[in-house]
Image (cartoon, rainbow, N blue to C red):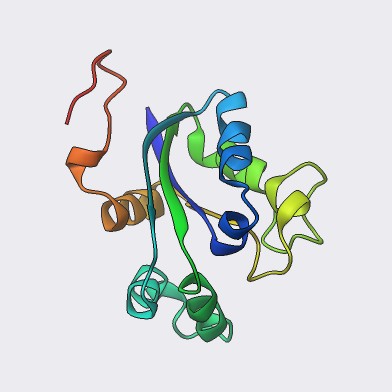
Length: 146
């Protein structure tokens, strides 16, 4: 089973959209295999988004992502990265396809409700940043395993 990290960002948490966002992934047949709520410090955000540190939006993104709690989840399923990104939509909510999470709930390129892993390498790195192995369920074996 492929895995992907999704972050429900501070704007979506403030708007009480946690359940709605998760529901959209589950209705598409994806499985939540780990989940937790946390509040990033600015330093933690900067470590998580280190690949973007030379980009002009880095400071705004760091400020925004440390402005309130987020929900981090690991989703599992066949082609989960591709499917998750399709459900999330384009980074800019005004350019996202109608019915995607960002089109429905995002406010701007930065305040866009969700983050999703871009590829398998990013997913592995992001998941290990957010979760320990003991926090991720193994549904492939038919049992819950730490």
